[in-house]
Length: 490
Ligand code: TNX
Image 1 (tube, protein in one colour):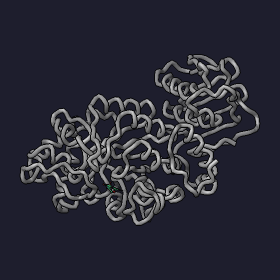
Image 2: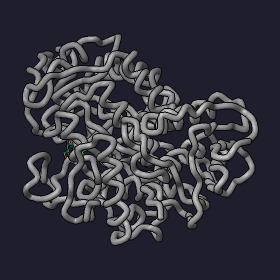
Image 3: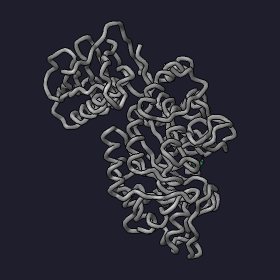
């Protein structure tokens, strides 16, 4: 029996097998370049271990062992991201009404092959058999996200591409980048260059800083887009802004820039709510960020504004909402924006306070679920975990991260207001690629399943077994993940 993460909504397999042969081709029923790109990514994923050529062509699957990708617009029940997979002894056929669906089908196909398929080097004595059967699958939630804090510590373009590959492998479709905070400003704003040049020059602990040029950022967005992942940029305001305040005197209430900040306190900084220049600054930043963003959402933070009065906060957020919506984008903010008057289409992101998130849903607005005590990957696994924080007053083991349901976590929320789930990796204590891998994996596999798989198909005892095998794949991919004692790793 193949093991898949996330678990498909319907799958059955039998004893007969399909064998991928060195002569196999990937055959498309269309000449659309999007589908060609999906096929090219599939071939690139299968090639290192098999060393098969896997040429791609439009036409009909003719020889035994071919893989067929069929874009077929006639199954409305599959929705915008659904797909079917039919494996017979002769061929593997992937069908979907959209390119996104076909892409997910290829990710499922990858996981059906023996674990050796994920090796980076040639596996000469391996045969590439997969069980015959059918999969019919579609996601439970439209929003399946991960947030990475690149402000407390900076992660460069290559690290993000590596992460994007892993998100795609688990059918996660949103990468939210927390681009600015007290400790760093990580994106070049051409009209305010010192934000990145000075505000991006360091990080938590005085560790090396960094920032994305606009070309870097475009490259990340494009790489993600090819993998059906939308990048959501976050510029946090009015709090979490020391790096900006340190870069320009005029953004400060008293006209004096503070020093750069390398500690981990929160809630001490605020933009000058009553100065006109503040709004000029925000218009410029939002305009440049919107121009870099093909996706429909811009995130404005709005969290933990402990040095801004409630009235000022409300005035500020409502004014920012005007600025964001004027660019044609929809605004997202952390749950605190529930206290303000939200426009239709604005989205609030739950992390801790059930009362304020309910104020958002009471206005008819949609929400994203990121409960800190379940979905924060910077929270320690257990008391001995050296990395991470534990301010939630609990730890988040693999089981805690897996065994919850976004729809029933908070009493009284209308189910249709929940767009989906987003896990978050804050990086006050996370610095290296190894740190990131260790805190994100394997919790992220569980969040992927919560986002994708319907609740009735999720079961911890069964998941444990699948994760035990899936760990071998992560291993082959070189991920230094946390070997929880809750799992009998294979
Ligand atoms: C809370 S959640 C924060 C972040 C911290 C994180 C650490 C939220 C919107 N704000 O500023 O990095 O906790 O876990």
